[in-house]
Every structure is written in structure tokens, then in C-alpha cells.
Length: 95
Image (tube, rainbow, N blue to C red; front, side, top):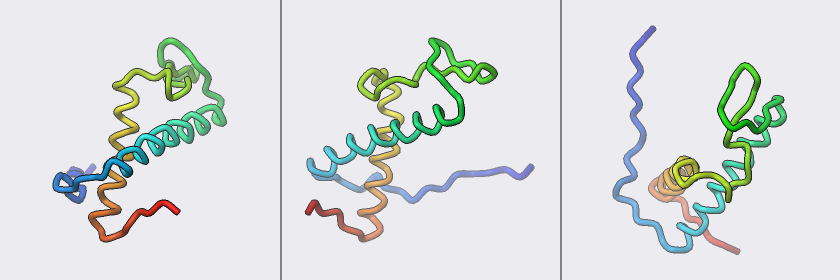
């Protein structure tokens, strides 16, 4: 096995507007919805403790019911994606 060293594009210098920050929360919620839909389609269901053999997962709840730590996981994905899009020179505009 080869040693893998992640090397994401640095986005620490990106400052997002309030409008884009609000968008990031919508993207975070949708990220959770897509993940949950995929899990449920694969036969997973809610369980208080994760059990891969039984396909139980405690995060199979509405986004609003997740702990802040779990929401932060989805928020980070959304924020980093938005920062990268803007850093690469794209613009995001609401119609």
C-alpha cells in the first residue's frame, strides 16, 4: 500500500459573503438529505448506536435533529466547496 498525503487546495484566504454563508447552510442540509437517502436506499435504518452489520445509524434523522457536531461535518463540506468554487474564479449569483 502506498502512503497517501491529502493535498487540498488552500481556501483559508477566502471570505464568504453573508448570502453565500446562508447558502452553505442549505447545502449542508441537502448534503445530509442525499447521504440519508442513499443509506436508506441501501437498507439502513435509524438506531441509537451505529451497527454496520445490522445497518443501523444514529444520524438517520432530520438535519434539524442532528447534533451541532454532526451538522458541522456537513457544513464544513459545503463551506469548503463554496470557497473552492469562488477561489477558482467562478461566481455564484441568485436569479
